Picture 1: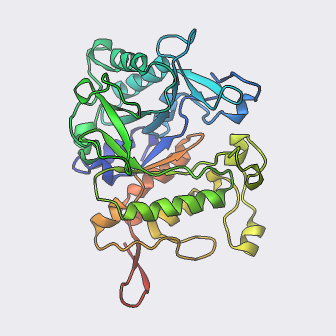
Picture 2: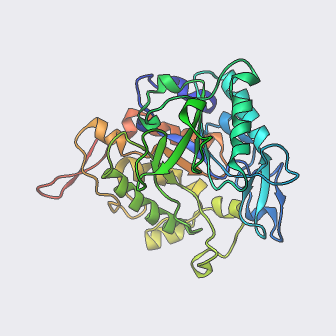
Picture 3: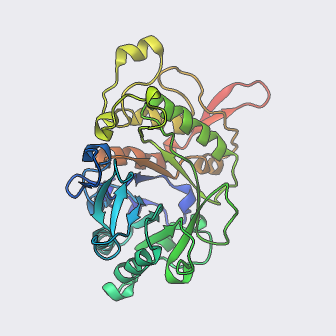
Length: 356
């Protein structure tokens, strides 16, 4: 299916927590608008090639948006990544929101999730811009999703033509009746409404460490309450400044993400090599079958009993850098029934079996 309108093929009765979608890590930081604000080159922080509209067209539906509401940066501020010395400013908040309105106005059977986190400055300014640009005043159509219930348990039919705006921050201005919702972690105190998610990035540029960290999160999610939240899997490689000796000694995110595999090393050491963009097939096998395609080992041990159970343990969002249609289509294909199988470990003899 085409990446730009793939949600139109999703059954209306499926829950949000039952589908898998591509997600944009540090969505606003793309090369055309990036401007460094410290001593480090922009390439240390750039994570995307194109703006939000084009990322939507390339299949992404979950956007990691971090806004710096600073003096001289326009209404609502700009997206950012990193700190003052190694960080970069990106697409303005207004342009980000206009891109979302433009996309949803064209493709009305899609939906977009904007997760606002780590906001610097007054979050009310971000709230005001969201309501101004995505609310009914901007074009007659109210794109803001308004509900006072658990968003993860909503049917896709209720989400079409909507921007689901969720905030990690706490403020009286963030309320469901205004189309603004709280975002919280699964291990935090439960919220009566909003969007809850589990998952965390592995904080390493070495892909094998990324895999190990995400496998742990897969197994943790399998023991969580069904349909109560989204599982966000991070297929991202991040330089950990606190552990430079464990890294690939480069902070160029593109270079790390597109590093080609070393097949000789893979054969010799039976482990994954290269960057995230060359290993999507590996990830698909890992999440849909539970096996390491390089070593043949079972990486996950999830006891499931039905098709519904298998569906709910799949990741709901796979975050990655440099969103493109090819990678997104690989992720979208995880919604196909043939890839919803998962390893089932027999409780009696420990024999792993695969069920379609």
